[in-house]
Image (cartoon, rainbow, N blue to C red; front, side, top):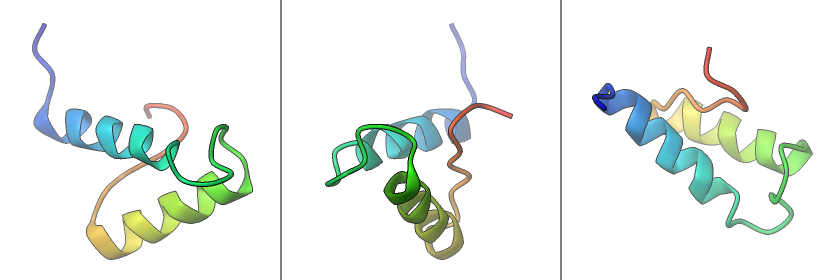
Length: 50
């Protein structure tokens, strides 16, 4: 199976956010971390693939 490198990086970062406190779901804290990482580190993390 071949996947685009950006998809792999975003997926790994998405899963790493779940390791942060209060981020075991896609709630408020998850969204805050994802928004910060997207803005400051250039990722495209979302709850689902677009």
